[in-house]
Length: 329
Image 1: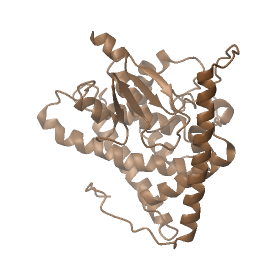
Image 2: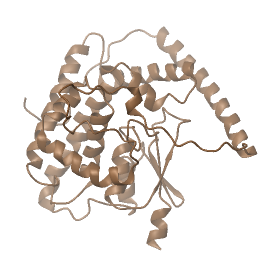
Image 3: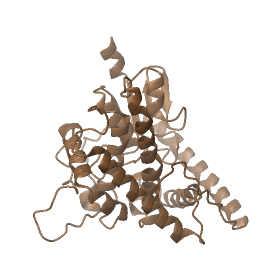
């Protein structure tokens, strides 16, 4: 009965590319959380609503755990008793475990989204989120999200350089703290996998395989050998065994050539298997027709948003320097 219940679990994420089952930095931790729990689940992709903050979400029975509700998908799965990797943690370890997890979900997540939307040229984010949409709509939604990320991170024209330095400084502190915490152990806490491991592994694989070679964040992560060994171990155990050979060589592995390997779009994505063409059903035709209506309404909404935004004053975003974590340089 439990096996039947587990098989009804469906993870809806953003599409697979860059050699990963999903290239979305928010979706990867949920994917590994379910993998760590050895729970059978179906992985499906949603390319119709690329900017939805509900993605990822997990369907189980008649219930749905959304990314933007109840603290996220993982917390909802724990509260509902579906999957809980954190149960049974000793009381004395919980304070440090909570603070370490908070450091990952704040400082490292902020650094990852900064590089994805602002620090890079935009092609990576566009490929993950908008490449399946018509070009004008995809580009408009991309610029809309860049604006939203700048607001989220408190970045203005005046403080851009200072905020960038602060984001990278915190990321370096976080990697150093995680490396120290891990040491030569296999796991971060209590010789077992927890949701913290899933969150960090999802982040680390995104940084290593999705962000370009010029990524500052990637170079900071590669400076910690024990973290790289940790990533490779669990990647081999939970990702490569269930993936096809189309996954490119891991950027964490040393190259046999003295010339640095440059990764381009042709080596990032895995080519899907060709399928025989078949005639579309009425349901599929109806779905595609509704999808076109949705994209049209999205375009109108974005145009209205941009017109309102352009008419507003260019007010500076007040930066809250209280990051919630007391850490010394």
